[in-house]
Image: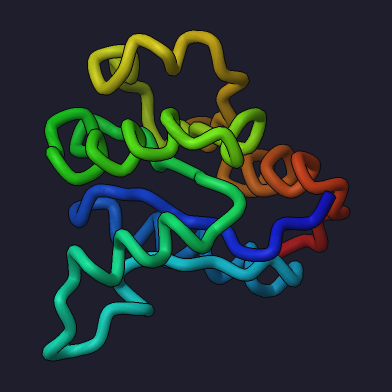
Length: 137
């Protein structure tokens, strides 16, 4: 089931990884929303994030040591966990080894997509979530 739009939650220090991930997803036809490319100067960023969370049908959270301490990542994840439409549509992406259960104890029950060893393998596994064949970088 291909997503209509994926909300990509991340910590600002993980921007390089997140931009690279978003580019691969878009190249494979997966529409992605994340703050760096969708919030324009002068916009109320919290309103834009809320609007995107209400609109998107999948939620991907980039897990890193930075994300564990960022209030907004926790807030976005908490919102997604409360929404029925995100049941079986929350995908935790492990960009680096970290104690991700410190962000939310619920993450232990999700199948993680591990990018910490290989970005390409992580992309292949993530795209498989939507039955999309990975095309080599």
